[in-house]
Image (cartoon, rainbow, N blue to C red; front, side, top):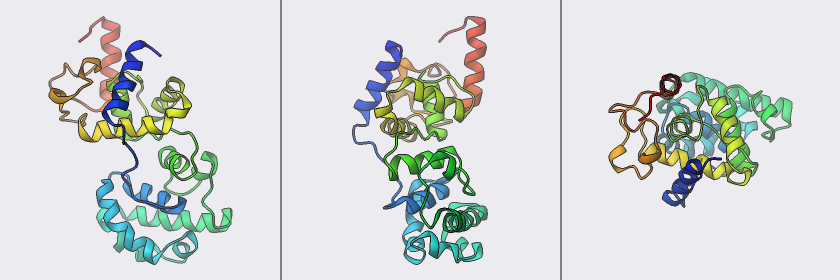
Length: 229
């Protein structure tokens, strides 16, 4: 870890000492469902719909008996109808293959319909207390902009962050990066003027931010050409 990377992580820790999950959940099943719903949707919106959903379908067994058409009205405001189908299908697999209990390994969780590494890592970290770094678009974007990673995919970013950050800080670092991404380092219009970490940012000199994949390609091109901010 470079001195600059240490400074970035220390700065994030100081900026967001109380950072934590903004989704509401009380058990692994609720964590799983809420995280599936949160894809391309705000946590605030998910938190609005899940109380009624969990009231009527409190566990995998209850959800497994439902049809996607029954679930979709509960979650319609969270986006795609496929989310309802995935929640029902995942619940059925949990009942049929895992004895009604949400699995607690990455390999098993990613077998569930609609569950990728990010969702699986959220469940592992925040329901089972396992060390993990869930990488969503905020983590991907901020980690690359602040020089904690230099990757074109979320999988590469996850590997680089795991190699860089002490395992004991993985879950908390995930929250630091998400909070900074949501509050300051937005995708298209980041608030660079008020960013306490802009001196470390590889993209702050750009008048208009582009998406993380394009950021990574641009930085690679600049390194090759010997260009810097």
